[in-house]
Amino acid sequence: MAQMKIEDIRALSPDQQDDVVLNLKKERFNLRFQRATGQLENTSRLREARRDIARIKTVAAQQRAKKK
Image (cartoon, rainbow, N blue to C red; front, side, top):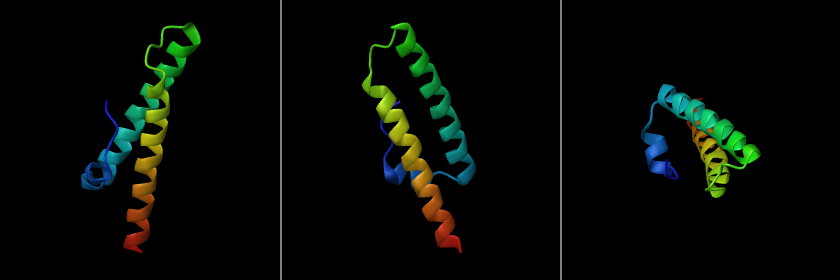
């Protein structure tokens, strides 16, 4: 999965955002496991996944604040 763009994240519904975050957390867990066993080839993907999660959570928080 490539880095997510802000426009793409904003186009998602809150439920879809939650699903994407869940999938990214699972991917991050698997990547950490691969790194621990020495099987991880693309080490930068860990950082990208972590930042994608933060990006989605930030947009979700902005959208919640905007509704209030």
